[in-house]
Amino acid sequence: PVLIPVYDRYIHFEKVINTLSKCHNSDKTELYIYIDFAKSNQVLECQNSILNTISDFEHNFKLINVIQRSFNMGAQNNILDAIDDLFRKYKSIIFLEDDCIVHPSFLNFLNSCLNKYADNEDILGVSGYLYPINYTVQFGDKDIVKLPYSSAWGMGLWKSKYSRPELKSKQILSLIKQKKIVTLLKNVSNRHHYVSLKEVFFKRDRWGDFCFMLSLLNNDKKWIFPVHTLVINIGADGSGVHQGSYNFNIIDSQI
Picture 1 (tube, rainbow, N blue to C red):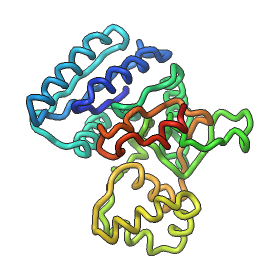
Picture 2 (cartoon, rainbow, N blue to C red; picture 1 turned 90 degrees about the vertical axis):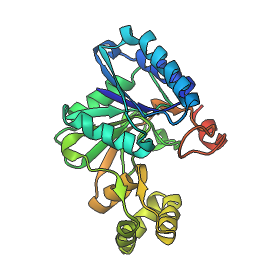
Picture 3 (tube, rainbow, N blue to C red; picture 1 turned 30 degrees about the vertical axis):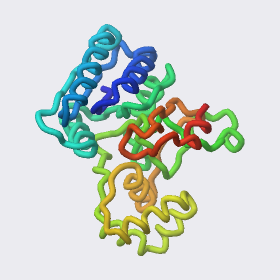
C-alpha cells in the first residue's frame, strides 16, 4: 500500500497522484490518503479539490482509501499516526509526501526492495529519492547504493524494523556526546551536525529524516537508494512545513 498524507496543497497533490497513476503496477496498488482536519473554510475548499482529484484517479488504482481526520492533528501527528495505522494491517508500506512526483518505475523499485531486503537486518529502509550527489562515477552501472541516510520523499518501511523517528533534545544530546556519533555525523553530513547542536542549544525536539539518520549511525545500519533518483520534490515554494520559499539549490540539482 502507498500512504500519502495531505492537508491543503491540492495543486501539488494532483501532480503527485498523476505521476503515481502512471507507475507500472499502479492498478495493483492500494492507496491510502490521510487528510488532516481543515482549520479554515479556505483550507476546506482546497480539501474539496483534493477529494475531486482523488475521484478522477480512482480507476487507476486497485483501491483508494480516504481517511478524513475529525480534528486537526498537525503534519507530524497526521503522518506518524497514519504510519502506525497502516502497520496494524500490513507488514510493509510505501510512504510518499504530497509534493513528490515519481518516475514510472517508482512502485516497482520500492516493492522489489521491500521484498528483497525484508529479512536483511542491516537495511532499515528504502528510498526512491537520491540526494543530488553523482554516485555513478563510483558505482558505475550498479542499480542501488547503501547509505547511512534516509529520505521521506518516497520511502519503503517494514513494520518489524520501524521505530518512530522522534527524538527529544535530551536524547539528541546523549547521542552527540558520543565521539563515534559526532565523527560519523560530520563525515556523513556537516549540515546535520550543526542542526543537532542547534536543536540541543534551543532545547527543541526533532522528528523526521534526521532522527532516522542518527539511529542509522548509532546502530551501524543503512538504507537502500537508487543510483538515479526516482523522485523529484516540487514543494520548495514555501507551501510546506519544512522547506523555505524557492529553494533553487534543491530544484536545480534535480532537473
